Image (cartoon, rainbow, N blue to C red):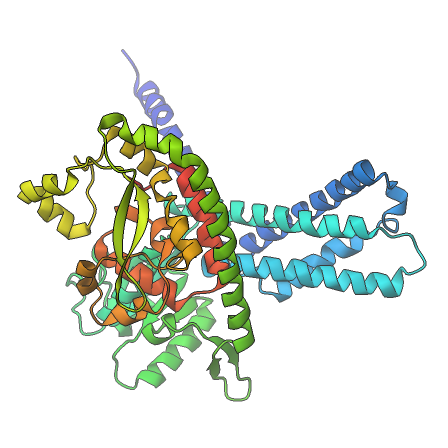
Length: 502
């Protein structure tokens, strides 16, 4: 018979893998939650990318231009300009914690840092190394490779952090404090961006009993009132307090005390305001009064960005139209395999002036698709709810393939070239969808609708209609050419993965 010692040993051996996994997760979470860890990881990644770019630039210039390495730059010069670049990136706030950096800001800061570093090195070389051999080709090659490798390494780290956060690792423990409306708005804002950097561990709403459920944060325990925040921080080990418009007596005095006590506890505080969250303004810290001064972005910057956007629409509209024309005969044959009919489908949308216009798509449905919808009341009700249907019986087999890889969207490049659509913008809507936007319709129509947009890369048909509305407003409130570039790059990735389309 087995002894008690053998039974205990067997039980230990059975649970030890689970214990090891749990211990590993805890250790990884503590490491990633350490404030210095993200900065060190990104700095190491940047230095690796810059060093690799330097080595590749030397070899490329040597191989293709036949310039010997000894004549390309002064000896050990890279030991100067690689740290110089890291300092420039630091000055551009490139080492903020990853959950605080949006992807378009990552792109903008990286591009600006590389540009400033390149110009700084050119000026420094002109002064310090005028009499020494120096290859301008090598510096240009380094600049281009540094930008590509830096962006690749940084966005790879962003994807890695996103995967870890989604798995519940490395997230910062956060308490939500304030009004129910403010807490709900804050969570919705993070939800539409698919931001998982915080582990919400509880709420401290105003005017709510401690044991009552929180309608603004379903699934989260209510840990008391706003006055109990210190007890909640001690009990939960929270690292971040998110304060959203709390309604408390002597609010300024209470908030000042919270900030002071949080500073002593080394707990971060985020002050959420729905006004500032939807206002795309620059800001500066007034060191005399301690206030933040908000101001609009320079007119020249917006003018340049709009000019770049128009140029991008023209170029991509022309390229896309040529590709569409070349593929049209092939698609015509495929579309008509399951029944003769027109190649194109004219889809109506509301233009900026409120009129109804049309763009073309390759036909993906049976010719009698409208009759199928009219005959089936249940199908019609499902369509009205989201304006989309999963497993739509009207779609042909070839049409499902075209939709999966977004080939049906190619004729929209004609409308981009014509100027009715933009490459990136809010989603197109039909007249019957205008009611979903209510008073927000004017803001939606202030921007030209796009072939792709924020909604398409953040969930597409997997989102609810209200989420789509919020995503359109998010894009409009935060528009920049950098956001358009990120959306365009994500669109290519989504199309290659055939994700979110049906």
